[in-house]
Length: 112
Length: 247
Image 1 (tube, rainbow over the protein chains, first blue to last red):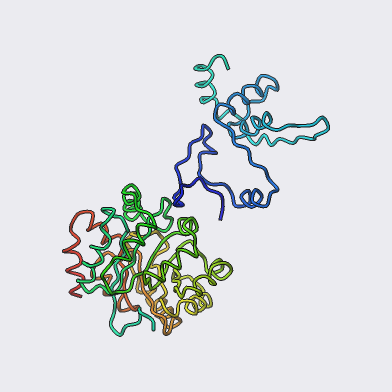
Image 2: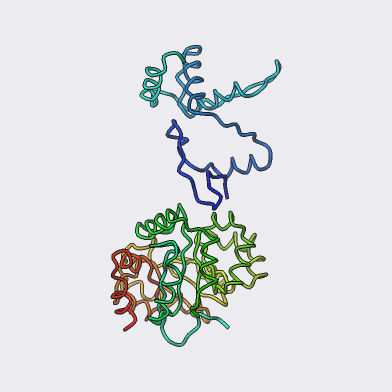
């Protein structure tokens, strides 16, 4: 059907993500198919990596990304690009809604 | 020979494997058989039971916490001494995870009379799974509602010649108390006609003796789940079944 966070018995595992939009154990069947057929490569990103990437984007571009999109930004560090690569990044939402999370994180981790 | 075909009106009970205790299944089966229940539906607990209301959801959670899984359920079922037909009801994900072919092979081995997978559509069954069901002579059973098109019900009957058609009495989840309106009664009769030789059972929200009687007048029998499990949770199930078996 689709890809799920599940245990060895096929029971769905309660997920965790710092981003509300990603705090769900499954993905859309279209994505699952695209991964299954090899057209999409999937990269895992931790809460911390997303927060660090969000901060960098905010400071360098003046754009506060949504926490969901911050995961895409964090993936940039994990891919080797060549000089002529054309990179399209889907910055799918704004981070105004996540200000509280950013603030909590930045006040407790001043040295990020 | 269809084990669900009887001249008399029938009553079936649904229970959740592994509830209230990890090993309670076989004792429950024996007890229900002694109360002359016609067949039993054994639910395979799933973390995301999308057709179930709060009572069955809760029993599934307890059963999973108790550590129940398909391996254990099959081991318990293999040891049972009861003779009445058993139906296994489970969602597709744990079954795929277990391996559908292996699942059906063991179903055959432990003599399961029918398998209900609520989130397996007729189309998915035909396209991917029917070959394995047929190879292991396990009968599928499909859920319909009052709004299911006639042609679809006919197709389901063709595939369930050795089991039955399960009419879900409401568009909600299990355990939502339903009321039968007089205007809808002809619809039930029409569905009964379409099913012909294939037995028709009605479930979801059957929580009183009156509803069992009404449902038995409309179809071949009634299936009780949430109301029984609620009584079981409160340790009132003996009284509950006793009263029902007097019907």
